[in-house]
Image (cartoon, rainbow, N blue to C red; front, side):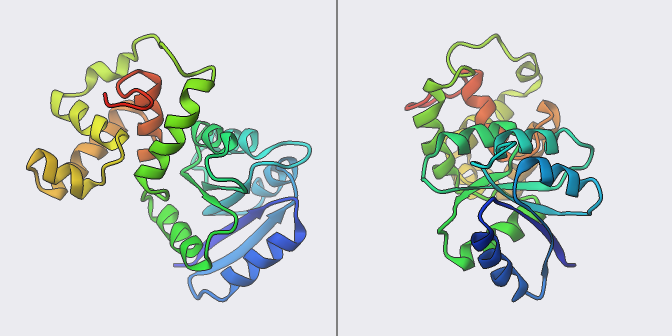
Length: 223
């Protein structure tokens, strides 16, 4: 199956570089490009796309708001945020808006390709530890951080599911959670799937964000 990719960035030269890398892959095709968020939304209405590589700093409509609007659509493509600086506050906002992950623009081509394939398959695209580091730095600075009203959906989780959710938010992989709780990795994967379903979340990244927002896990510390 060919992964249909859209490039959204106001730098033509950068889009050209990404397009050359992706064009060399037998399982990928760049089906659309846009130089800003407004154009991206227009193009997406007429183009079938699986994964969007999204710059955050663009004219007219930035990548965060564009991501939010894309993710509100039914059956939206996956969005991978591209940022110039590690731990960029825009990347955090992009994750909250519904992006499946973020990467640096100067990432080695092999890592970018792996990330696109991971996004397409529904897996996490940023290392949990990287996401945790991002949240530790920016969660206390943003309006949504700090004391939050109790999240009613959390009450639907079993004790074991809450335990798994906390460990996901602390940056552990499924294998590490399995070892910690003396469970099989398949069982952990099942728990994660149930957490996503019960809380109406798209992926592990959103699990981490919600865990911070609800105080289940605190920035700079454990739950």
